[in-house]
Amino acid sequence: MMMLGIETSCDETAAAVVRDDAPAGAARVLSEVVLSQLDEHRPYGGVVPEIAARAHLDHVDRLVAAAMHQAGVGFKDLDAVAATGGPGLIGGVIVGVMTAKAICAVHGLPFVAVNHLEGHALTARLSDDVAFPYLLLLVSGGHCQTLAVEGVGRYRRLGTTIDDAAGEAFDKVAKMLGLGYPGGPAVQAAAERGDATRFPLPRPLKGRPGCDFSFSGLKTAVRQTVEKLPPGALTERDTNDLAAAFQTALVDATLDRVARAVALFRHTYPNGTALVVAGGVAANAPLRKGLSSLAERAELQFVAPPLRWCTDNAAMIAWAGLERLRLGQFESLDFKPRPRWPLDPDAPKAVGAGGVKA
Ligand code: KG4
Ligand code: ZN
Image (cartoon, rainbow, N blue to C red; front, side, top):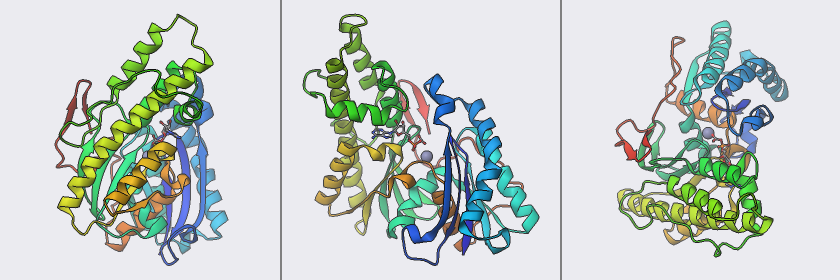
């Protein structure tokens, strides 16, 4: 089967054509195009929803045409069209959903609304044919959660953040240190030149029961450390040392929480196959290294899909669409975009000092 996928839920406009009758990996992806809006949002130090929605609207038709052209196929060759139906910035989600619905209406194709998180969750099957059940750590700018992936549409959340997402913490700390946006890659680069032992920082929730994450206390501790240094005189060495201390603390705290999720997963699913990581923070080298040895100790395969499929992309949306279509799961054209759409609606709400996050 062949699927066109469209992703517009955050700051990437993306389209891809994916087929499922090819070996795992790149052979399945006939084309993928992605336009990052980083430059539009950079002056604001974060994603501005209204700017994002307008940019998606400006570019989505051209990107869909480019993906179809690069794949060398026409709409009549497709079995269906999938678009991210949520969760995400609603203006952008509407743009992708309306584009997909229009193509489906004109060409008489089924429309598959994909949960963006399900796209991330199933990517390891596009790249590596990982068998169910597996444990997923989704770490991005908007999410930080561990999920037992039991099957298509069957997810059990083991832990989630009670305040900030991990990528959000990287971005905010980068801003405090004057390292620019997005912060993750800049903090990692500075940390490589720094001494992680000079500034002591907390490891939120480390050693505590449960699998939830928390990063806002760590972020506050970085701010307080900056404020204690001579005003306006953050030297390059200070910046590097603080970046190193922050990254070490964040990775340490994250690995503690994931280790607990791994133990719980191992206990609940004796036939569990793998530990999979997805999301932009999966690019972080020390985190990857730690996760890989965690998996090895638990005798799980460690799967980190290629980076272009860890960050937001349309190949994962097309793939999740294929997985759902194979099971006969698709929507009618009156599907309504969902700004909030938890993968595990039965998961207890994580309540932190900052409120409630899905
Ligand atoms: O998945 P993604 O591309 O977008 C969403 O948030 O959906 O993730 C982007 C996040 C940003 O917060 C960015 O700072 C972070 O991933 N990131 C990293 C690294 N590369 C990107 N964080 C830590 N280390 C990195 N090398
Ligand atoms: Zn994402």
